[in-house]
Length: 631
Image (cartoon, rainbow, N blue to C red; front, side):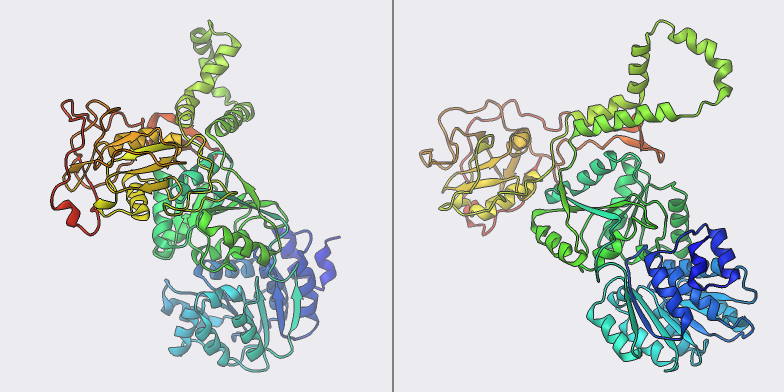
């Protein structure tokens, strides 16, 4: 027996439920449907995204509508176009066996005249976004003064998007005696204010703990330096070959930029944000639902309409400005009782937000490290092996097998497997073999201090450098650190233990940056003066005397280490060859389009002096060192 039959729904709805394949009602449906069918009442329902709220209000709403009355009887407000269309389609599916019920979607980006025409033909249920609905009311194109039911879906998100005044105005145009059903994932003050102002003794139902996250979603975070955020995203995608995900960014610009970079690097990705036309948004969502897109990069606003089954991961490329929004993001996965994972890529400065989110969702995050290149290679090799094993053979190739066997007859089974895997995998493994670990340290967090306060950091393994610029060049330890980070394109924590003297300075980096430091800084000019950097024997624990000669030293010089300046002012990008290309939704890689690592990049001046030139007379007058010119 279908458990929906026990909720009091009529036969036509049960038949539609059977067609839709629903078997057991979700918790919010089990609590809300009998209550709403039993009597006309106001109700506040707190439940996470993906728990079946549309059916929870949709089934009772359809059963209560008078199909013979062509006037508008119900209004459903939702925050975005996508969600508006989604609710409309679901209500149409629910009412497929209810003759005469008409549901019309009202949203921006489409013809307001055509929408008004559809309503005039008879629309018992209007599903609308607040902005367009207010516009239609102002133009006298719709009459909601006699409706019986008003549903506020994703109320917290509508108010978070700035629709408070529109919602108040719309509700003020409806009769006091109507029933108002408010559905929300969280209960911020503005939602409570709406409930108090426009609802009379509402019944409250809560699924799980109030404001809590879904129990089907696990939460994990990865700590990286800010400059490694995109590389971390790629590695997480590569470590999950069957990923089917929504990647959240804060702004439309970031959303578009990250999607374009992913596409350029061979991933099946697309952007979804407010600057796309309705046709473009529909096309993107169609591709995503068809799993032609593995990574949908979206803003919070645009993602409100994403109701796609089997999303495996939600990736928070950037945390939202409003911590409560995290709940809506994570609700894109773990839907309909299935398990999902919500990932946060976070920097040290954002760690405190993780604790804030944990308090809100009543769940703990698991800290994980970004997989190393070797780990990813192992995952991908096993994935490829399984993909080969599970591939269905098209027997059309049988006619070609004799010729193929003839070519491969001298190879053993082991050699054949190695070569077959290597065809697709050689470039991929070559890429990750040389890539560094990008996980940042979460414990013993490094603190930057001045000269008199050495860092609480074990120097073992760090490389210490001498550089011939100092305080007389208008640097202190902080400004020199900023200058080095910008010039070397390194992260905040990659340059440390900066010790500034009058004519020279010291600083540390981790060993993997040594070649980059030596190559770039020894090829840079500052106000016409060549910078010289050398690896120092000073471990940073004491003070080594360099005779305070304005950076000149008598021994240990590298011969010919000054290159001509590079043309242009663009930043050095080091050895950032693009990642291996991915192919199709299975996560394979197309090695043939993988760009090779950059070679050379810096020309040496064979006749370069082995001593730093004297500082120009005008250099010391500059209040702040300028960005270096490069040859």
